[in-house]
Length: 188
Image (cartoon, rainbow, N blue to C red; front, side, top):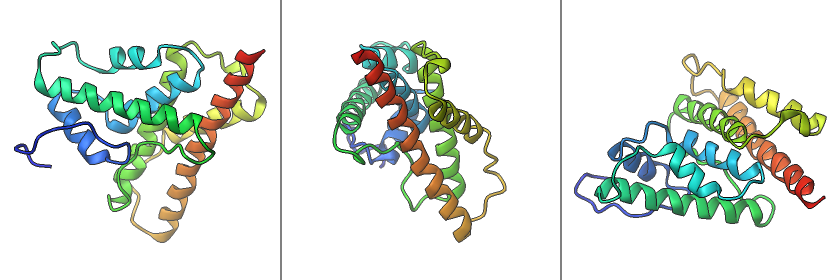
């Protein structure tokens, strides 16, 4: 996307466009980390996740700033799509990550960023790790390990591609475990 092209709200799958908007609006997080934070907030089962998320991640700039307004609109659209996907049919939700054509190291770093954001979002909404089942606590522990992944040594081998695909699928599993457990806890 060139600087001359108009900026508009993006689809959830358009990582590059959101990254461009983030750069223009001085968002200090990667799109994956920002999305992870929202998913953590959302899966924690609390209300007003969108307002809390935007307040947490956006710089405190006037909304009249064109780039900031475009970024806010794009992030709002991503949040709405994420909510619909998490509440929708099984498998509709996907973490916001770079396109498959991106270098393996960049995609692995985004997985780590998303994981860090998800854990931060859960903590931000005051989720008590002890309130989860043992399997979910173990999964959250594994997610913590993913945040420490060393991406600098990764090459674009088929084995690494397969491993990253499995880790990416695991992100979905963790998000769904947390979301479902929190929904059940609130229903009681």
